[in-house]
Amino acid sequence: MKLLGNIIWFVFGGLIAALLWFLLGILLSITIIGIPLGLQCFKFSNLVIFPFGRDVTINFEKHPIANILWVIFVGWEMALSYIGIGVFFCITIIGIPFGLQWFKLTTLALFPFGAKIE
Image 1 (cartoon, rainbow, N blue to C red):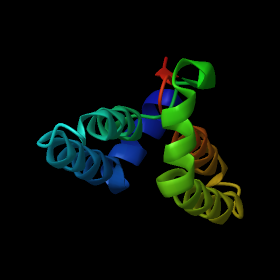
Image 2 (cartoon, rainbow, N blue to C red):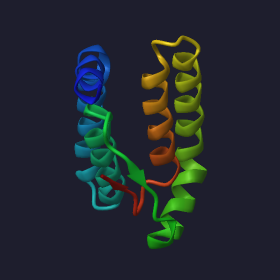
Image 3 (tube, one colour):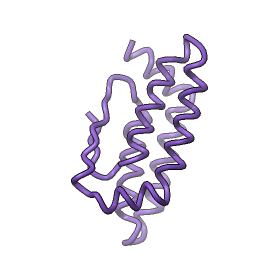
């Protein structure tokens, strides 16, 4: 299921989303202030290309101030949009595995600093 899910995800938007996150990471990494945010964009790019079979572990204590600032300025909007997309996919039985992947992205969207993708 992981291989088939990753192939379908990759073909129907995973590649485009990963490229967009990667380009955003490059743009943010051009400035010194944007480097920490750019690194988080690379983390999103890494997860969004093949999310099936991977897990996100959150370590909020590693960078609490950065995570709080992220949630205030960026994270809550991303999390709400990912939850909405996940609920939309979970309406149908076929879409449930893809909805669960969007919920996985939601956890990363809330607290990306210190999170690990396994």
